[in-house]
Image 1 (cartoon, rainbow, N blue to C red):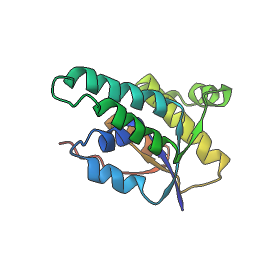
Image 2: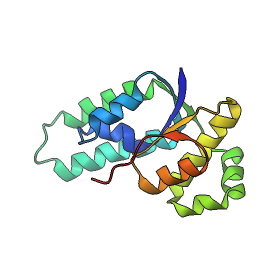
Image 3: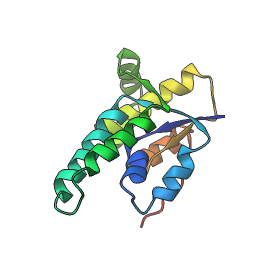
Image 4: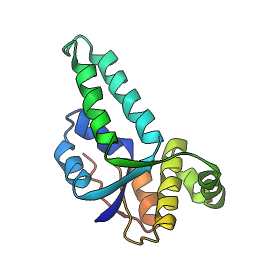
Length: 148
């Protein structure tokens, strides 16, 4: 089974029924899932933000239901905490400054998973364009980014 690193854009696409939901779900299936602990933080904040912004359009139990589903997805992921190994990756790879800070942390974490597992076929799935470009630069297999 392939090792797949996920950032929050993919999981939020699934949870928020976005246009890319089917595509995101396809990436999610049939892989050994890994991510940074950031995935938990970013996805719960994303759900709560969506609820607060659209509360008038959503059912009262929407947030509770989505949170339960989110927790089920989290159970499928091996999470890495942020520590000095991630900090070191960021320090060593100056190119990470080409994307936002949290995205740089995601890529640095994916690099650590790749090292730990001696797996050249590590996938990194994201819908963020700058993160996607850096993933390719660091020889991750990744999804196609279509500007829509």
